[in-house]
Each structure stands twice: as structure tokens, then as C-alpha cells.
Length: 121
Image 1 (cartoon, helix red, strand yellow):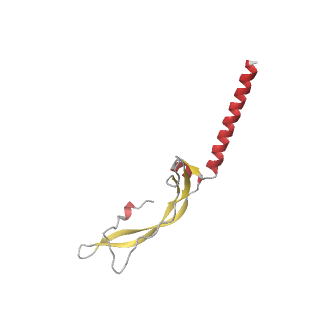
Image 2 (cartoon, helix red, strand yellow):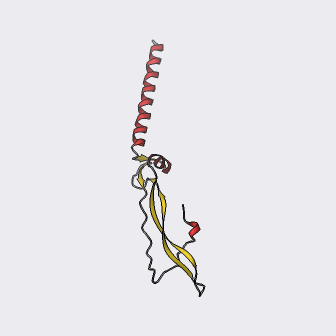
Image 3 (tube, one colour):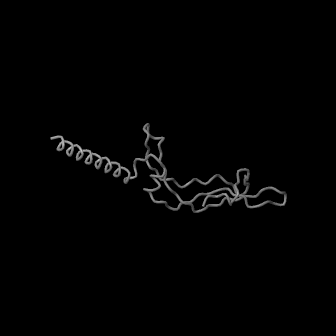
């Protein structure tokens, strides 16, 4: 009897484990719940998007930094947004295209201009 009970217990443990793994994989495959950014990055494909920066273009005759607004094609991925729940998990969200910084080409403010070599590729 104990041998039969042991086999039955093992069977139910295996069945329970299988059910648990399937449940995790289903929610993971849907790309809804997450714990880390890496989970979302593995489940949601990267796309191309646009990001604009005010970049340094040189120096004028008065030794003032010149700049321009430049837009680049960048990879748009996904992340795990855990701020929207009170639990230890979050939801995968696609990064959005970034809003271009305000820039007036007639009166450029180059105080926040960045080096074009520092732009993420």
C-alpha cells in the first residue's frame, strides 16, 4: 500500500509541477506579466524607431558652440513596468517613440547639446 501511495503522490507532484510550468509559460508567452526587463526583451521583438537629439555641430567664429536638431533611427525595445502594480511583477510595455526636444533653428539654445558620438546606436 505505501508503494502505491508513493507512486500516486509522485504522479500528482509531477502533474502539479507540469501544470505550474504551463501556467507560467502561458502568461510569459502572452508578454503580459513580467519580473525583469529581460523577459520582455525576449518576448517582444525589437523594432526601429526615431529619436531626436540636439547635437553639437562645431564652433562659430566667436568660439560659441553651434548645434542642430538631428534625428536617428534607433532600436525600440520593451521593458517591464512594475510601477503600475502593487505586486512584485509588472507588465511588459513597448518603448514609445521619443518626443523631439524643443529646438528653434533661428535662435538655437546649445546649452544642452550633446556630442554626436555619444548617441546610442
